[in-house]
Image (tube, rainbow, N blue to C red; front, side, top):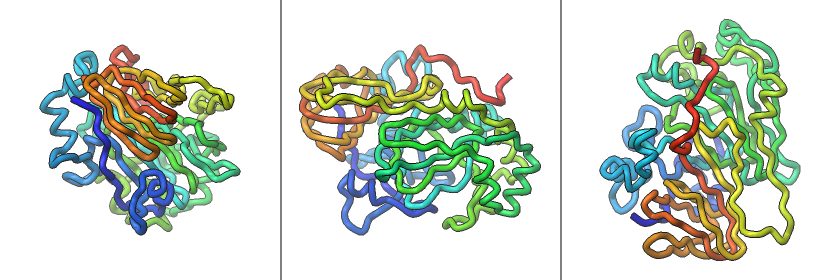
Amino acid sequence: MTPFILPPNTFDHFYRGGRHIAELRGSPPGTHRPEEWLGSVVTRFGESAMGLTTFDGHTLRAEIAANPVDWLGAAHVARHGPSPSVLVKLLDPAQRLPVHLHPTRTFAAEHLGCPYGKTEAWVILETEPAGGDVFVGTNRSVAHHEWATLVEAQDTDAMLELLRPVAVRSGDAVLVPAGTPHAIGPDLLVLELQEPTDLSILLEWRGFDIDGAADGHLGLGFDVAIGAIRPDALRDDELERLVARSVETSDQATDSVVSVMPDGADPYFRAWAVDSTTEVDLPAGFGVLLVTGGGGRLAHRSGSVDIERGDALVIPAAANPCRLVGRLTAYLSQPPAPDALEPHEWDMP
């Protein structure tokens, strides 16, 4: 049970992009794809294998199912079962993503037979020099019948006018609760943490390479799917709590591991910005490590592995304790803690 460097797991999607992923991960020229799933035990919706992490002829899903305690830790398995409870992605859109949303756990259980919804969070890795924009929640209450009218008309301008823009820069993190309409602006490289599903409801698809009328409602029909949308406005104080701004550090920053997530993310997942000038211990447990700068090694219980910018690794719980050695920057994505609070979502009593 040792950490291992992940092979590429990119694929095409209905939106354009992939230049930043290719530069970071060292993809061959001409293979720009706008998404990569890291340490994934999840398939794309409707697919049998696409999306799964594979290595040495095995899938990570099968390996964890065969030995969940060593992979995830006894406390995690006792609380959350044999699922990692988190999916980690790189998103690299060259165009604004469409207005869409994801179901809550209550909706997913009732209509899709799935125990997870899709609350997600975006850690902004790179932006253009002037920054970028994301869009989260609505600025007023929007009844379901109004959404139905906008979707049928594909009135993109009206949909965007309803959403609340958030200016972001590298290092910021934004939590997007399930049921919240949202979109991501272009030219952002995003590390996304989310519940382990691929459940998306498209409200907008004009100009994208997808037949949203046929494929945008999870097979439920829009009459049902639109019921997953939170109908009330996102208040100023709520939006403020969903955004965690990057912490400025001096040029002489010491070894550090800093949580980057808003507090509301704790029931779903955790993410840490790791800065090693000499060496730094990593939080214990299962995790996905993305190296964003420098080089050195990841020391673990039974040895070490050389790492450098662009490497992504899966760390089994049994490989701990782990330590970064060298001058490195990285992000560590992890499941919720075994003692995390239970989620409470907008449609729960």
